[in-house]
Image (cartoon, rainbow, N blue to C red; front, side, top):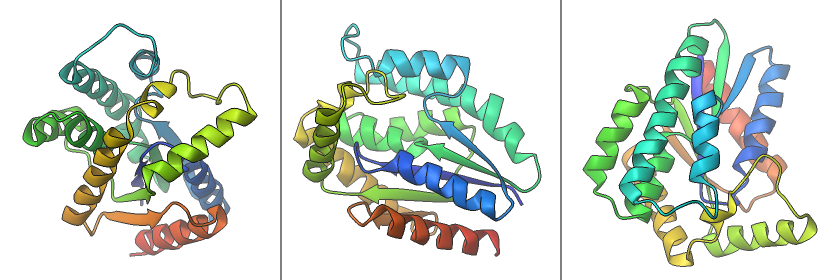
Length: 217
């Protein structure tokens, strides 16, 4: 059985760490695993990712950003995710997906929820992850973690321009977090909210346990 899993959360909650940990753990269980990034992975997605997260890029409106994220996701679904899911015994793990757009562009930037949901539905072609993990933390804690890491090295690997979102106001990040928690409340069967402040190894064990239980249904 092939399965699509996504990881979500505010900045600095450790999504990428858990994505990679889950991949390594599933490989030990003889699954074929592919990691994708939203936006990213495809040529169009990588181009738009760099542009959207570029700190000093020209100003754009929230609706423009929404449509660009949608274009990147449409490419990702068509070119990578759908073909991969047709392969046997394959797990696709996405670092962000549809819930990020709803949390950031609707709850964070204030675009109408129904508008964002409809554009998101079109962009993902009705493809919804079987499992979603939201790594949850008070934004003041996760942003402090980012600042601590940044003080130890000048750049963060593979996160060109990511600082653009990290430098948004704490009010913005609190809205995004509230959005994630509201999304989780409405879809309890798909979404698991985990405390991102727990030790990484404990989170990894919890995530693997949930995923294996899902795969053995």
